[in-house]
Each structure stands twice: as structure tokens, then as C-alpha cells.
Amino acid sequence: MKKNRTDFDTRFWAVRRKHSGLQLMETFFQITDLATSKKRLNSIMNYAVKRDRWIKEDPSVIFHFRQSMQSFIRAGYLITLKENKWAVNTQTEDSSPILLGLLSEKEYQNPLLVFKKAFREYSVQEFDYFMSGMVYFSLGVYDNLPERNIVSPYIHLTKMLDAAHLILERRGKKCC
Image 1 (cartoon, rainbow, N blue to C red):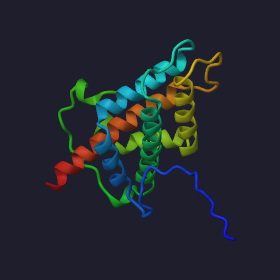
Image 2 (cartoon, rainbow, N blue to C red):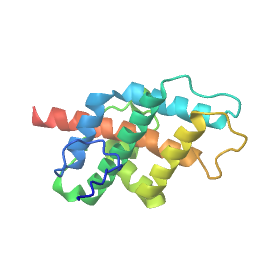
Image 3 (tube, one colour):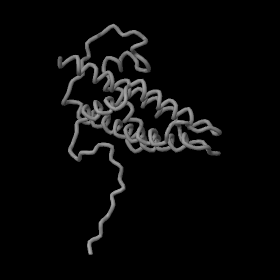
Image 4 (cartoon, one colour):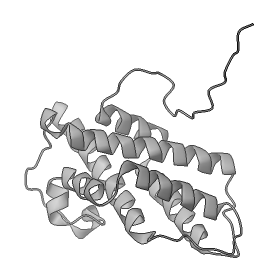
């Protein structure tokens, strides 16, 4: 008799073929826009540090967001590995403080620097651990707080969202 094993490993992408980092980022932003993803990440972070409250959103939405963010992080890592295969439009543009967001002027001109800096400080697994911990603490009331620095990975993720959106925006302008 054959034993059928159930694969419990979660996969955000249904197809098992290789994707480029830019394709994965495009898919991420097709599912959720920049403002919504930053707002959801911010609310998860806020509720994670509040001991007596939990997020009122549907847990399945939060879990789906965590999975999509994990895929987004891997896409950013793929981009840093294959940076020589594509070029970012680094023309000097008028950059107002509103457009910059959390990005510095250097990072605005070359958004790839954001991903390089983030993956120099933290590994993909550390970002996964951070996201899992924040989701865990935001979905319930707990006596303990996260034991690690949670501000720095949060800032890196917010900057990576801005930088990825900027990369895709410039890529769209370049090909048209």
C-alpha cells in the first residue's frame, strides 16, 4: 500500500517555475498596492507592541499578507543577487520630500541600495522570523514583548516597499 504524504509547506506562488525578482514584485503589487501594504504592515507592528489589544482584521488576511511579504522579501533578495542583469534609471529627477518617503536622496536615485543595505544587516530568515513574530503578537493578547529589536527590520521593510515600487515605476517608464 502506498503512503501518500501531505505537503504542509506553504507556497504563495502556485506555479513551481522560477521567477525573476521583478516579476515577483509586480505580482506582489498586483495583489496589494503600496499604500495598503504599508498601512497593513504598520497596523501589524502597532498591535504587536500593544500588550492588551489585538488586531481586529480577519486573521486569514493577516496570514496571507505575511506570506506575500515573505515572497516580497525573497524577490528583493533575488534582485540583489542579480543586480547586473538589469539597470535602474538613475537620472536626476526633482525629488520632493513627499516623493522620497523614508528614502534618502541617494536611495531615491538608486533604489537597489535599499535592498543591499537591508540584506547586509539581516538575512532572509531573520526577516521571516520578524514577520512571523509580529503577526503572532498582533493576533493575540500576550504578557511578553518581542525579544529582539523590532524597529530596524520594520524600517527596512517599509523602505523596501517604497524602493520596489519606485523600481517598478521606473521600469514601466523605461520600456514605454
